[in-house]
Length: 112
Length: 112
Image (cartoon, rainbow over all chains, first blue to last red; front, side):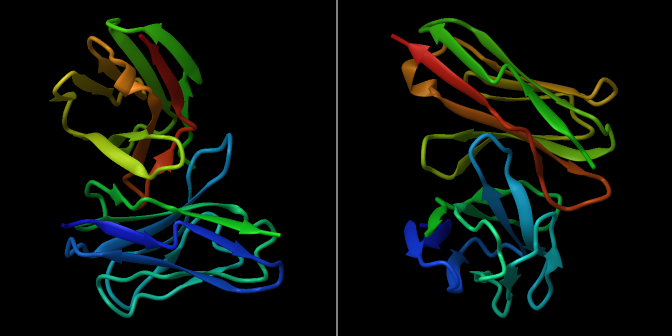
């Protein structure tokens, strides 16, 4: 099956710990994105990557980091510097930037 | 920055009704506009993509229109069904950027 997978579905961490969210796609897409969704707010862009070994900050990149070493993988690390990390995180990909974006099932992160 | 607004925030209709969801955006210089569906706790499912040069797109009972000059898009759902109950999101990609700018969504409930 072609698609985007995110793991785990639910993640719980203690405050002060870094945590890495996985995003994998087998669609052969060049572009990948990370969004954050909070109740009552629209999705907001954290980072995006147009091609392997390249990525750009989005609107709310502070406290997050990413890597793009392989075309199919775009992991997101939520660091202890992120002030309010509890949220629903969504990964997306597209053939290239400006093309239709497809989303994964999301990871719900809870930090206490 | 592109602002995307969706009206109404919530809508409840009886089964069988035709309905219209509205989306407005502040910057008409968009590359494309995408409509998504989101079920509770799930990722986003792409419904329709309208390129900036297009006026509308259709898929089954769904029809999306785009009027760039007025900064508006509408999603028309014909003969609504309880299975259509979900949150509907619109998002645009600006000419100056690469990622989607999202509205906060319209929560639709179709009652039997």
